[in-house]
Length: 553
Ligand code: GLC
Image (tube, rainbow, N blue to C red; front, side, top):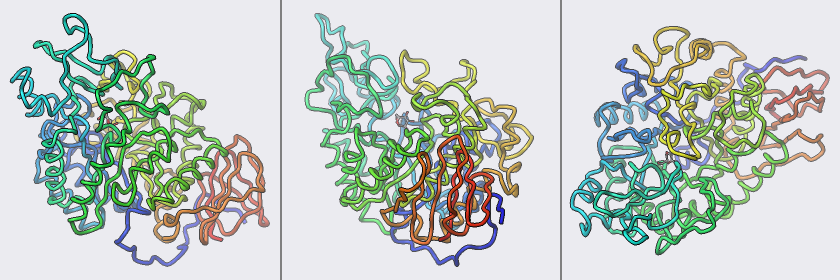
């Protein structure tokens, strides 16, 4: 028997999904609103655009949508510089539009998670503007980290910390004081020792919970508390978001008290609402501390995102992630792409070891083949999976954006580690042709490549071996097999050649070839889905290079 890609026959009956604990096995789709869908043709995505496309997300088969920030913001860092946490930026619409997105999503059975940015505000936030205007001695300055400088005339920064986006983490005001910003100068860090800051954020939580959101993605969750006295790093350590060094501004134990207080607020609300932490920590064990039973619910697995396409390393990370989460009772999470990293189709098109900011297109065919295989591997793991808009189309990163259109603040700052994030933020293609390929009726705030039309939703819909149909089928199987995302274990088979993985889940098996060569192995059962063309004959499977296959066993 020879099979090609997908088996269209229904696999299992489709039991109703349990609402309680939905997040333990949910597939959550990240929308970057600026680049998702533009309803008014101004070249920028907006909330009505999101609203119009919700049925697409329902049909894709995801459980929830995480919206990157759409709040009032000068957009110095793509909206992660919030000027008013309770207002929608006019470029995205109004609060009524946000309300409509939440209501429509719920009517379609989708949950909505919004972004919360507590580490820093915009420099255009009312608090910061007044703190600056009132000058040294203003009590409002205590809500941020204002300091006098070092040196005879205070001309040197208060300590040696560097901004993640490059350059010093301090900016001096004309009145002589300096303020701390771990990111861009337009993103002053809030002082979480100040009770007004803690009060304000509990109130912001309530505002959005009252609006009906199902949860929050917590931006820079590891950064809120700084070590006492803001000590120098010394030794010129390079600052890294995903660092294995312990930093005086990241992953301080004091953050956990904040999350315990937030959990109390969340638990006052009905429904099964959640927090997911963006917490870059040295180890998965440190990450697990954020998801203890009285803190947050999930944390992104950036160790997994950063893994090379290599069987032994993937297996090691899967095991260590499951092992780290088991004692705290939180689900493991899995993610391959987001708005801060080069899309995985392009990461895997390049040699390993280049990090998550890659500037070369690499071998596109190879990258897509591996990306599809990596996705099926991820979606077969127990826990919750995060998808980033456009990955279901197999989009590559746009690596050749001209410098003059780039907007990433890090690009403009010397040695910023995140300088190439615009390439994963190019508006996504919905139709084969048309202005901005169906993104909107007008243009697109970042130029789209000519090849975008052939990668569009329209071009891939109904094409059995398209990446979009592979995602749809995979998510349908996940729904049909509720055990797939549940649990905390996988059972590995050890007898396979190097570079080949096989693990079993209840009634299910997954085989993965991470090598560049085809292998012949025993077929474990009935093929459900494959990331590329495969042949099964006489109980044997020819598993091509860089291919994943799902089986009913
Ligand atoms: C997070 C966001 C990133 C942003 C940074 C500062 O890492 O994901 O986009 O630039 O925080 O808010």
